[in-house]
Image 1 (cartoon, one colour):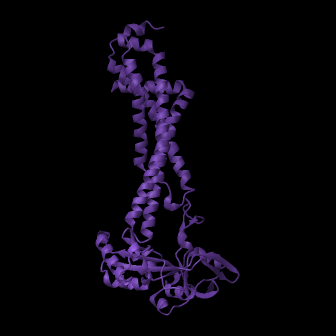
Image 2 (image 1 turned 90 degrees about the vertical axis):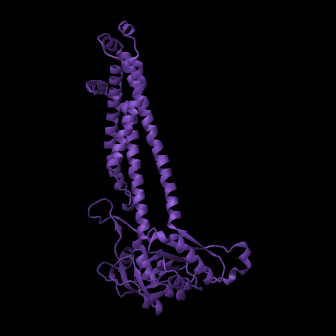
Image 3 (image 1 turned 45 degrees about the horizontal axis):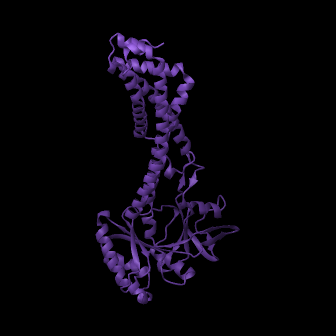
Length: 415
């Protein structure tokens, strides 16, 4: 232990005695450690953003029913299938007990021009069922959401996002019960959604970035089909299960039901969040590889610098090492001292790198949306310090072995 403390003290003396050389030597370690911690923070932020997106769009237990071309042997009979329609929604709710809720949507082709008293904006308009608000987790701030009566009577009612309300209505004007036009058709605003503004880093978040939920415009699905569509097909069909463990059985039941409603034509496929998770895993791994490579290169460069400094230091202290050996120091004593000096240099770079990484992440948090905001974690800092220490030991190993093998006689004869 005494030798370890001696090595640490010697290492600090080396750093303080050659400040510029030490700074240039440690720069690679600083860069590598900061990049490593920054990478872990960025990836953690992306993972949190992905989990939030999954949660806000129905959770992992969601199944999307997608259209696909009928198999080759059914191509001639493919026109017999009505495609995805509201009949599929009712059939799944009736015949698939594992389905918790089913939603469908239609989109106005080309979007819509939304107008109110000289103010206008272009936006995607979604014709939805009431269950969409629950599955996609939309909350109302003022008024009400669309209900079954809106669909049954094909009412021209609309629910808008907070930002759409700000664009269309001057400050002080209550949007509720106002009539706006969508592509020239009058619609009454019955609800304004919660403001999903994302804080930009300040405690108040008043000038934060805006979620896409704030630009939502919802009308009854049946109204959208009647006013803006020429067919009864829906663009989106989703099923939410009560339990993700039911996924395999539910998929089989849903396919059986859709095969029946589509008159035996196999023109749909099911997409689960497992496919999305696999895609995200690939993306996350690519981040680890690309950003991790930068960190590794920096640490390697820093390790080479430390090795060069230690070799130069040994060349300058050959006689000192010879005296110590002549006075009874063992090879292991010299080995431990040199390794301790190398470790000290690496830890100094690692600590500076940790400070740099904290500053880097704090800066990035002001420019990245809250959903994907990088996070600083204790385990990332521990990994950064541990990586720096490992590089220091490995970089000092060869110089330490070389110093420990010096012959006392030859070392004392060195000028």
